[in-house]
Amino acid sequence: MLIASFTLLVGFVVLIVGGELLVRGAVRVAERAGMSQLLIGLTIVGFGTSAPELVASVEAARSGSPGIAWGNVVGSNLANSLLILGTASLILPMVVPRGPLWRDGGLALIATIGLWIVARTSGITIAVGFGFLTLLLAYLGYAYWAEKTQPVGASALHEKAESLEVADTHLHDEQPLWRSILTLLVGMVMIVAGGRWLVQGAVEIAFIIGMSEAVIGLTVIAIGTSLPELVTSIIAAYKGASAVALGNVLGSNIFNLLLIGGVTAVISPGSIPIEITNYGLPLLIAASLLLMLFAATGRKISRWEGAILLFLYMVQLIYNVVAV
Image (cartoon, rainbow, N blue to C red):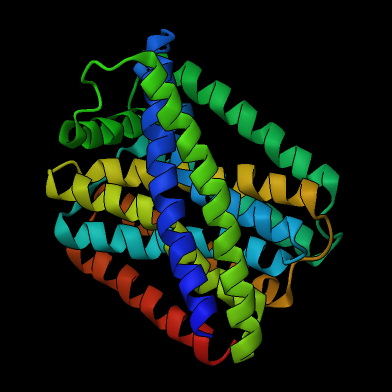
């Protein structure tokens, strides 16, 4: 048990640090290649913050543990919608731009409902995975086109989030290109290694304590891989840019569902564990609807609404551990 816990902890740390290095190196290389901040925010930053979830889910699927993979996807989005937005709204009430709410939040909700319907009927197939990936490409293309003229959506908010991070870390200081490439490569190696250790530790712990892999994915793995989004959103709220947290979460939810869910379906088609089909996905749908309801009323998420989101996350977390 001690060795498994240590492996899990080391995997978390290496995964998070690797994801940070991946984003830093990729953004710097992209800038040197002439990519716009808008495109960097929409693609590299969005992908980078979801890299821990991606690597953990892919490693779990490849290792024959689809419960951890899908539990991570659904659990990370629950953590994003309830834990992260609840915490950020407690720090500073969150102003909600209407465009990103309905476009990005709506897409994440539709994708969640679609995944739930497929899981209850035909099961997860390779075709479903490629469908999710195609939808992601279409979303990125449309969002980039739309925000070239009106940059108020998720990509612009991702760009602002990246600006907040680099303001503290002097990312834009001049440095040789080779160093940026090295940072990128080191980050890639670390997230692969960290994801492998994370899954190994989680599987061993689940076996020792008798907890299902799906519940481990919904709780421990999901919280750990959501740490980059949590840190970014807290920093944004403290700096008075609470809307950045919303953009960060909406973008991450879409990447989690369409990119990670799509890749997982392609690698490991089959059925989704019953804990996720009967509990995790319906709860995520309800949380998404509640979040959009809060955001639509008064165009902001107030502190008391944030407290409700945070309370609901704690309740479902306890229920997961005790009853599921």
